[in-house]
Amino acid sequence: MKKFVFVFDLDSTVISIESLNHLIKSKITDVSTQRKIDKIANAALNNEIDYHECMFQRFYTAQLHEEDFAKEGELSVEHINPGMRELFAWLKNNKYAIYIVSGGFLPVVKAVGKALDVQVTHLYANTFTEKEDGTLELDDGVLTYSDGKIKVINDIRKTYKEDVIITMIGDGTSDLCTWTKNSKKPVANYFVGCGINVQRPNVKKNCEMYALNTKEMQKYFIEIIKSES
Image 1: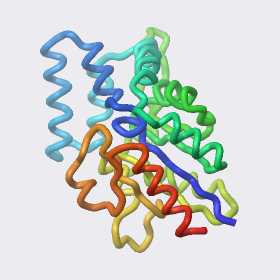
Image 2 (image 1 turned 135 degrees about the vertical axis):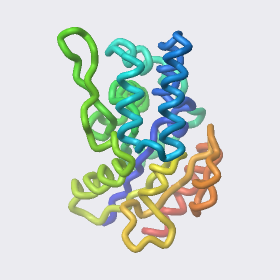
Image 3 (image 1 turned 90 degrees about the vertical axis):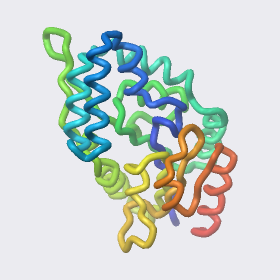
């Protein structure tokens, strides 16, 4: 018997905002610091620094605290996309496994996961350690790397003994790379691109299923389940 697993990205997929960007912009009021953080992000986009280095530089430049992430988690719940609660409820009622795998931070993912009734062991995101002086140290976890989601999905697959059909859902390249068209060994069996909040041309061009709302997403899920049953 096949086990159907649905793995969701968080930002601009389950919720309508990019949580780390939103947190930094709301927290940092100093213009020079904002420019420095923007410069780091642009350097990554231009391949001048890699994703891992960008993550660490932005984190430490912003000088965020644990309470900042707690507040962002509460705010992110308010930004859950329309129809997403109903979609998650439908998946759960049909006993399909739900995961959220994010390049963001675990306190935010936990807040959204709790609101959507996703078990905490099915939530994956970056973590940090609070030091004695109250500052945060970013943990060098797998999701601080550009191929982190590939490794996480491989780990998820290993937790099941039965035949597993994994569908990745997301808006970005890091989501798409878990399933590549014509790839001999994709880690995800299927990929549903998400264009609810942001439509990224590279993702839209290179996937076979692309949803602009949760109704379309559910339609693709039903097609996947039928084709594998």
